[in-house]
Amino acid sequence: MEETQSQPAVTTPPASAPLPAATPHAATLPGAAPLPAAPPYAAPPPASVPPQAVTSPGVATSQVPGELRRPGKLWYAVYTNSRAEKRVHERLLEQGVESFLPLQKTLRQWSDRKKLVERPLISSYVFVKIIQREYFTVRKTEGVVKFIMIQGKPVPIPEEQIDNLRILCGSDAEVEVSTDVYEKGDMVEVTVGSLTGLRGELIRVGRKHKVVIRVIQPGMNLTVDIKTNSIRKIGKNTDI
Image (cartoon, rainbow, N blue to C red; front, side, top):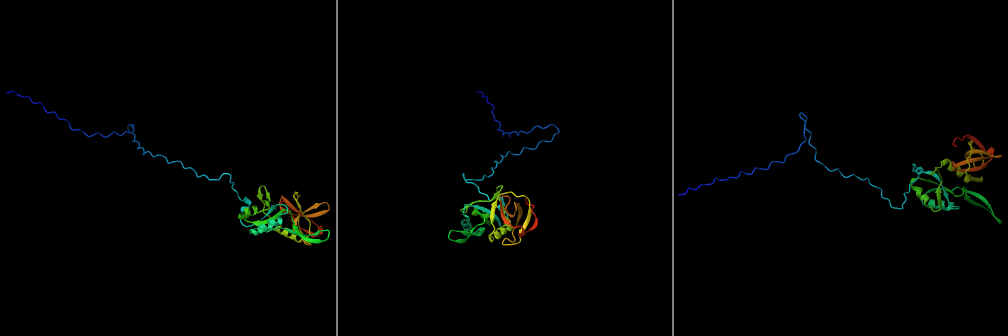
C-alpha cells in the first residue's frame, strides 16, 4: 500500500484588539512638572450691540429749557403778536394757565367825547406763572410769539417785580419800555401818590429823576417819571 503523506494543519492566530490611538502630549524637559491639560475649546459669545434709539425721520425732539425745570411755579414774560395781548391772556386762562396782563386805565379823547379805556401797560407782553409741563401749552397758544430769553434761556421774574407792575396798573404814571443799559445807581422807593411802594433804580436824565424798574435784566427796563420829593433811598444797586 502506498503511504500517504499528511499535510500539517495551518492555524490562523486570533485577531488582536485594536490598540487605542496614542494621545499626543507636550514634551517635557527632564525634571520639569508636566503642563496642565488645555481646557476644551469654547466659541466666544457674539458681541453685544448696544440698543439704538429709534427715531422717525424728520421728527424733531422738543425739550423744555433748563430754566423751566426748577421746582415750583415762576413768572416768565411772553412776547405776543401786535395788539393780541388780551386775546392771548384769555386763551391762557381758558387752558388753566396763570396769566397776568398789566392793564392801565387812560383817558381817551375823541372829537365828541372822552372815555376811560384799559390798554396794556407794556405792548405785546403777557406774564405767566408756570411749571415745566405748562411750557409747551403756553408756547403753542395762538398769538404767542416766544418766551423772553437771555442767552437762549427763559428768564424768571421775581415776584417783587410783578408786584411793581400791579402798582403801576393802578396809577396814571407814564411808562415806557427801554433796552438801554443803565449805570449803577441808588435803589429808591416811592413814598407818595398812587405809586407808593414801587421800588427801582434811580437814574438822572437832564433835570428829571426816573425810577427804573428792571423787569428783565438786561433785556428790558421800565422807566417811570417821578418827582424827587416823592421817593426815598433804600440802598445801593449792586446787581448791574
